[in-house]
Image (cartoon, rainbow over all chains, first blue to last red; front, side, top):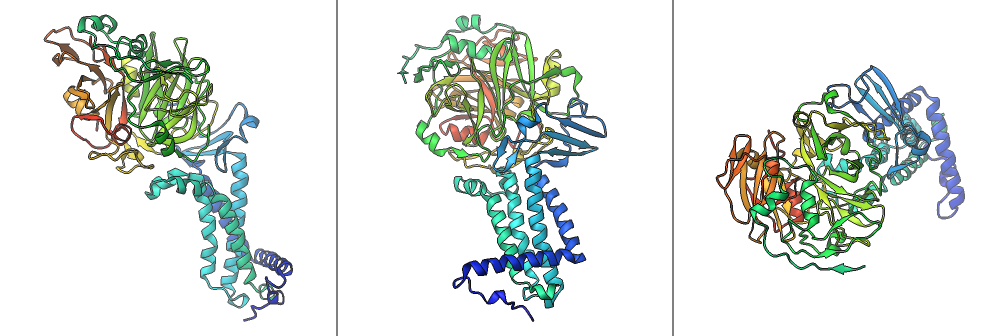
Length: 218
Length: 383
């Protein structure tokens, strides 16, 4: 297998800058190469959309309308409805929880409700892109065994930090679902899930990218 | 800060005396409980009291029983994960006639009646805001709700307002007042930190009932709408469901550790809890609704109390009963000491003690020395 590349011979201890530049270069190359393939693009697109939707559900911004009202007290009886707060600019940066911001619009389509929070849309799309790229590179690596020397399990491993990032949205309600009682320490850690997840995703991406032979991918 | 201690008042008021203040033969509004306490008529507790603060909310002279050091309660408080005002209180609630709304069956609302002004606050809206800073009959008040302890309580707020601190103790909402930034655990109604530490809020009764029951009792009532100034998926309770009962509200486990473990009983069974300056007592709500009259004592103080059910609203009221008078159901009302005047459940000619619904684990956590009356039942009530 032609996994060893020229830059990989640099030692991170002997030449850390050169090693890092080489790593980023190889990762960038791997990303471009992966997204240049159809299977890579499909993986990215599917994961990007799916992760963003899962993130919105996790935030409780997306879901089926509840059943508190059997009438029209909420004033939203039509099939499609959009309600915007009276002061969207004043509210859109209002922090609700760590990395969670105020919704400024509610979109109702039949039984489906979506709360539009611009800052969380940006965060969600960014996270989804990061997870999508990581998995796209992994899928390409997995489908092209000559391209690298990483196992098929790397693709699944790459998604773990992405899933971790989803935990931050739910806070203690997540603990309710999984049946774990909150403690001060656990709650403190949970507030850092999102930055930890982002760092984990970037590290995973660099790791996956470092193990792909750009020449073989191309 | 100035601490003052008030001497104990001697004895309970006699039946005839309290009858004057107790709206003989009729009902009393939600604020009726607190009026007597403010006037010092109903208190025989002699609890330690703390002077108020002109920038803070109104307080009462007599403190409620709090069986913990305030420092302990602060140390046991947890960051709930949302930050200060992360759960936004509602500052300008809007209303519509309750007769115009059709709610799901058994949907909980929190009812308040004062000066002929009846209002209902739907639980599914307050689970997203927890505090409504409102005015009822021209009086500034806060109607508050903690989803994790199942408690709905009302407080006079004066010229300030309350917000959600983002912290919890014993799973209970810790409010803060915007005038002094003091911390007020809702169930204790007592400041545990800040300039007003030790002070006791001026509380009034909030009735946990259902939309259809409140509308039947108060057909001219207003009901708060979801036009709160914020957007939420109001019809989705993040913790579970009351109609039908599900999620957190039905589980025997809690999300946060309780201050003290309960010896028995389902964590989410509902009690009608009352506390005085000398102790606390909890009446199992389902038992009370079944039996209609329960008697007990406040903690270990020997202070005799009686609870009666309002089956129409599926709620209960607690009264001091120092003379151990016989209270019996009589049709839809009650007779006392053999007299057949047919008093309404909220209008017995006895000295009322403010009471409210609470999840049993939360009550037992805050008041490990509480008395308990009735049978331990399952989660919720009325099923």
